[in-house]
Amino acid sequence: MPEMKRVLIFGGKTGWIGQMMGELVKKEEGIEVFIAETRIQNRESVAKELDEIKPTHVLNAAGITGRPNIDWCEDNKPATMRTNVIGTLNLADLCNERGIHCTVYATGCIFVYDEKHPEGSGIGFTEEDTPNFDGSFYSQTKGYMEPMLKEYPTCLILRVRMPVSDDLFHRNFVTKIAKYEKVVNIPNSMTILTEMLPASLAMAKKGLTGVYNFTNPGVISHNQVLDLYKKYIDPSYTYTNFTIEEQAKVIKAPRSNNELDTTKLMRDMPEGIVINDIHTAYELCFQRMKENLTKMGWLPDNMPAEFKRNK
Image 1 (cartoon, rainbow, N blue to C red):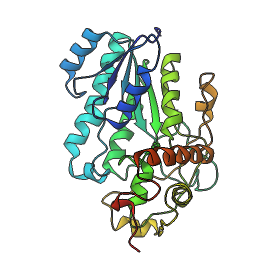
Image 2: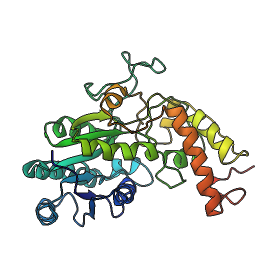
Image 3: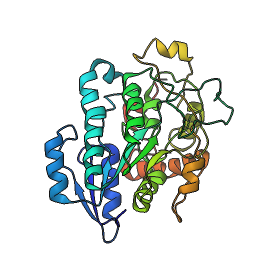
Image 4: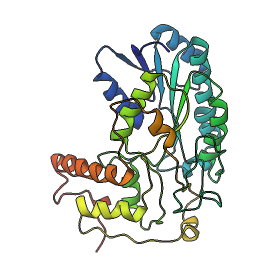
């Protein structure tokens, strides 16, 4: 693989992870960063952009997750496929033709706890396991994609799960569950972006390819996350649990809950990259969040109304 010199980011204009990766790459010395103008489903225009910019590396953070959540995909299946299937394959294929390393920010929401991987057992799904969850159309499209993407020798596929940032941006897993009336309480593997996004860049630089579970090691439950939210952000916050069966009545599509095995990720991680276990990573994340929200003037006592519980 060539040295990282020119990075082209898809999803870098409006995408959450794409924009963060743009900021990250800009800080790297000797690397030029370009934000893609084309949409990944438009094969000819993507080909033209690749040939004009001639990147050494492509980061694909373009994809449809739906607004406000993946239930949107249930009612917009052709649009979801256009980006998540056709677009993702287009870009991987065009990069492969040109020998360009392509990192895909994919998902680990293609598994659900089963008999061989029971909840709380510590037995996580590995990179070799076949997806066993297709309860939502979003996860279904992602489940189709992975076996095809891994046939491209220039492609690095990162299974991101329930991503978390150091703020209360609407895409952040913490933001989503803090706003819900009720939450399930299930341990899950999750991705703390401040730690994991620099890791993705280091992996691309190293020329790693194939599938990687891209989460912090270990699992954390919804309640444990909201307890940290209470501890650092809003001591007056309260939450209520309900069962998966009760949850099913208020969502269009079932959700994926799982633990991913991070043995391969930690083994192949380039030197100098620190990835903490999920509990440590979350504590540090909430400490940074408290600092950020204080700077914004939201803390100590000016949180927007949507985060406040009616007493």
